[in-house]
Length: 308
Image 1: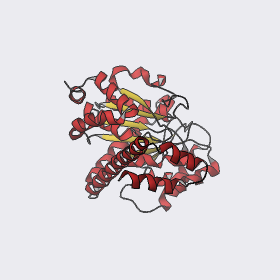
Image 2: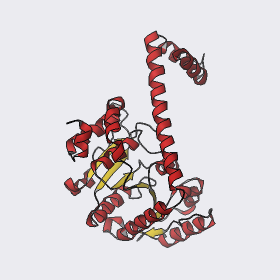
Image 3: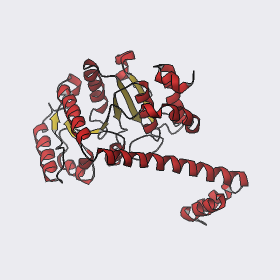
Image 4: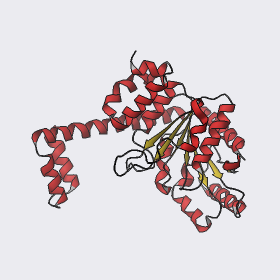
């Protein structure tokens, strides 16, 4: 049985091996993705983003438990900073989530320096989990502030997590985070200033552009499992609104375009680099750029022209 068919049949080991391939050997995973792709695209992908230290991992863990209790099949993808030595995820499979056991399939992905807080393997990892049968996937980003806006491209519902006491820092959300959030969670809401933080967020959202879905601002204490049911309810409400939106079909086409463009870019880079190395001028071009004798744009144009 092929690895793709094994994943569709519910083989956890096959899923784990495939996830390793999409990270470490993307080309080796091409056939697996092609085999499972018709079985993807269902369920809900929930992105959880926010600055480091706001309690994203705890919130994700509690949401997993909440949705398990509601009969959902849950998967977790946690994008971690890459090790500067191995390129692997520094946190590995997060020990604080291991208590879920076999009920939840959890995987850490290395960001490998990819901007936007998400690993390059993220869309393929989501597809593999969907093919495996997961209908609720929690995607936790690396936690790098404003660069987290890429999560919107992969998630059906995006949760932005903040904590009280941000003060003037709340203003920073205007630059991008406010626009991507479908649900805002003020975690650790037992801290002083929680009410003020919630008021400020609501005021900013009210001043923003009109939207079909008005993002709620919810209080939570994830560590104590307080407010989690309300967040889960909001996720399901947003999913209903999203699916009834007449622009949903257009969004699916936009997502398809992004996936095809990304795949095309990867293939083009691989072909150009392979051709340049085969002809023996790859290192020469790199040296010219390093010594400032040639700029990167002209170098890329020259390599592309030679590969055609």
